[in-house]
Image (tube, rainbow, N blue to C red; front, side):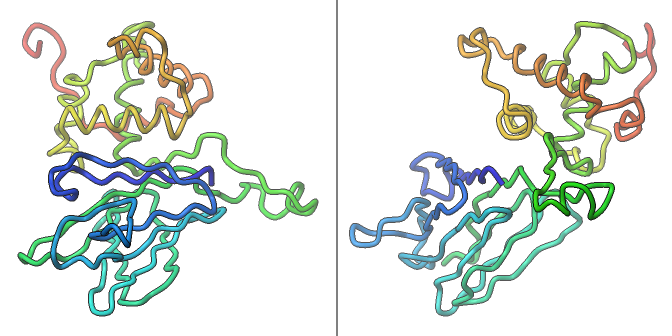
Length: 258
């Protein structure tokens, strides 16, 4: 894999600001309360968290979590799944994590939890043709655009592409509020916010499709990134008409449903 993205929200950092790390194969990020003698890349502000609570290590095709605590287990949840999680027991080293999206959860002194997220976008999939061709010659075929059709970001992508797939407009790309409204009827998106939609769009552009931000977007206009995402998705058939069935039913069209 090309690497992972680790995101620690401000709340987990004691309000000191969010932390975002990009780690490539072979790189390590340590997390915990930290100190001058024990520096950490992900500072977790709670007395129940060890100075060096654990570490994330990225390998060639997955990432691993080590738990340095002598007494506390950590949870790794799959936010995109149906409640799946892994428990990493105390002193467990190098536990392999299979989820594309993960939330690492640590217990706190007040009975709550602290959490940070890990995004691993480049999972490797087997060739549809099985073990032949390249595999017999010792090379491996990887997916150019690795998309999980069960993930929330894929629903956002389908909603972005919907007007063009339905031939409603050759140029229109839905705005963030429209996507929130369009997906509101989906069970997995009932609490989807505009900020979350923007994060999914950034994730699609930067990690899934590796699109550089257009100059006009860096100046404050965000449509360029959306247009590029939709163009790639439709050009390479990443989103097709059958994917529209993933979206919730649309309301009435016309004056009554305007």
